[in-house]
Length: 319
Length: 119
Image 1: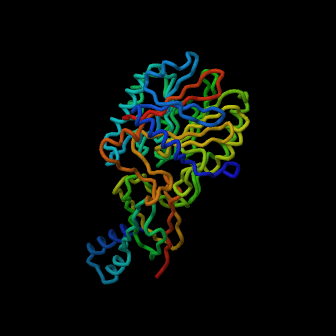
Image 2: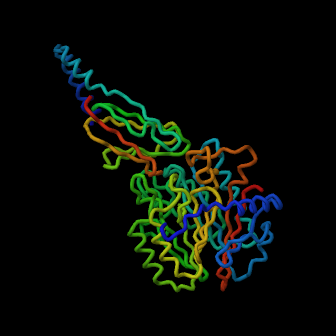
Image 3: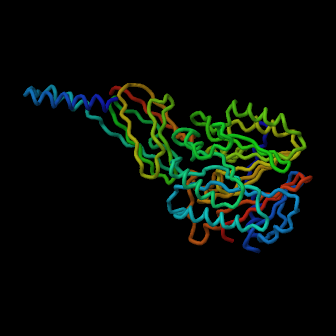
């Protein structure tokens, strides 16, 4: 954190642009990250994806499905996930895979993990990469989660993989906490990241997946990772780093040098803006009927070979 | 632990009754062992009260009023709830004196402490 500027991360101008563009088209907004500064290119529908360069890697981020949640803020989370799955299956350019940035389940129950895995199999993609959220590690750490989502069979919830010249690092940043602190990655995992990245050239684009933001969005609500500065230091030498987070159920961004950090919408329910006045806690927000679909959604990411910029398209379930 | 000793007291009492040896002393022991229950609410991502002092033998009942799951997990691992969904309860009887700090493993910024003191 000390090497990271603590400027409030919420970007009112971007949010304003987002709502403005969404109102204009009722659909998605294309983002490009150029020179480390994300900017909106314009609103688009799925049809515009045909313009994506043919040699580009496309994947989709979903997050915070909270299978098992049955409260007023969203009485039909399975319906919300199925809506997103239908959208993803209908994309003009088939994504290489889907990443789920955590809180797959709501209460870490085996039945919830089983249902989530079954639902995610409806995605017509080669594979789905998940990482755990704190809702997936409630009773026994990652043990219950790994029975359903152990991606490399190594019995740990962090791993890396390569696809189309991009190196992906999936992290578990929801455990290793002390009372009164934010969760952390822990020394063992950071040592693994260091070793993993030592085999990757600095010109390779890096995409990091972590459930909780890897920068401090709002410490009183635990919206940050206690030891993220250590991982940021390991990422800084790379020419293009994109960090995709979930947890806070809303789109926020921060840029630090060549590292762009983004949080995604949830597919379950909205949460308040960080430290929102009058709301003392990060509990589910119930919105008027018809508004929920605008606050839930998916993200498509396009990586064009030879370009350092990743184009992000955040798509609400309903415009 | 205390629940066990309470159970023992009941069994003892039953045995005593069978033998026709029920005495005022036995009733007094039973009364002294009956846990007093104290409620702690979990609401708006906080334990209320966050800091509580009780006598040995007191049972504390935590109730989660939030739509988000929480846990009651002691730092010394002497007690730990499962994930508590809305309206779920967890109880623990504190038999020994001491200061017992606890947290929510889902939201470790949520902390509380139970001071157990003879009164």
